[in-house]
Length: 456
Image (cartoon, rainbow, N blue to C red; front, side, top):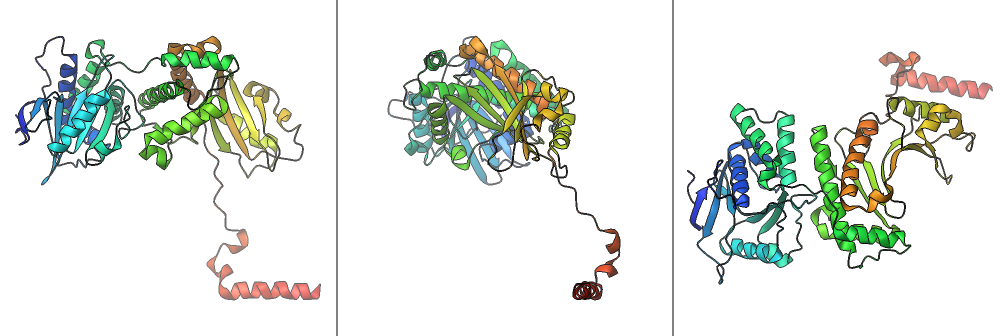
C-alpha cells in the first residue's frame, strides 16, 4: 500500500476492485480509474502529461480515495473523492480529484471549495471528472473565479476523454506490458458499460430547439440572448464528443483547431462562437486530423438547417487547364459516394467561386470551364452539405447526425485526398556535370551571349 502523504489524516490506496455499496457509483468508478492510472504507466503519463505535469518513465504515481485533509475549511464540508501524487525524483506534484457520473454535474460551490482546500494544504491542482466534455483538459466546464486558480491549477477530464486515451494507447500499441494491456482494456470495457455511470454527450440543451424555432421565424440570435450561451455550450460539447468518436475510429488523436488565445482562455472561445452565431446564425469550427491533406471546416447553418463539412486543396500548378486540374481532383474521389457532395472552384483575382455537384462534374468536366474561359482554378473545396430538415432542431437527432456526417465525410472524402506538391526541380541535360556550371564555364556562357547580342 502507498504511504499516506503528510497532509492527509485518512485515505486508502485506490482499489481496482473496490468494496463499495451499489449506491456509490462515483466512488466505485473513480477507484477503478485511479488504480489503472497508477498501475498502467503509459496511461498515467499521457493523462497527467496533458495537464503539464511531467511524468517521466521513472516517475511514480500513487492514488488515494476517501481522503481527509489535515487542514480543512471552517465548515469542514469539503471532502474530495480522491488524490493523485506524482513523484519525479525529489519533486512531488499533487492533485485533489472530484468525480461525477450519470447526470450529476459539477457545481461552482463545490469546486471553489476544493480549490481553497488545495491552497491551504499546499496541493498543486484540482482535477474533475464528469460526463461534461471540454475541448482541452486545461479548459473547465465551469466558469470559476480566476483568483482561485492563481496558485492552484484546475483541470478537467471528461469520461469520454479517458475512454478515448485508453483506446488510442491500445490502438497504437503504446503499452508493452501484457498485464497493463489487460488492465487498460478492462478499464475501457468497464467505463463503456452502463453500470459505470459514464454517459457520453448525446443531446443538445433545451435551448437548442427554442433558438432554432426563433431563427426559423426570421429572428436573429443576439450574442447576449439569454439562451445563446447554452446553445454554444451544447455545440462545443457536441463537437468534443464528435472529436472523441473520430479519434477512436481513426486510431489517431483528432484535434480542435484553436487560436492561441482560445486555447489559453476558454472564455474567448465562447465569445468568438457567440459572435459567429449572432452575425450569421451559424456555428462554425475547424478540426485537424493527423496526416490529412487539409483541415476540415465544419458549419451548422441554423436558417438552412444544414451541416456542412469541407476541405480546401490547392489546385495542381503543373496542370494548366481547368479540365486537367479537375481530373486530378476527381481521380482522388473516384470511390466517393456523390450524394450531398459538391466541388467549389476558387478562381484567380476577383472572380467569384463556382460550385457543382460531384455527380455533375463526373458526367461532364467541361461544365466547370464554360463560365470562365481561359482561366484555371487555383483551389478546390470539397464539401459535404447535409440538409437535416426537421432533425436539425431535434436535440438528440442533431448530435447523432453530427457524429454520422463527420464519420461519413472522412471515410468518403478526407481519407482519400492528397495535397498537391510541386515536383523538385531537375538538372537540365546540358548541366549534368559540375564542370558545366563552374565559374569559368559560366563566364564563357555569358560572354557568348554578349557576343550574340552585339552581333544581332
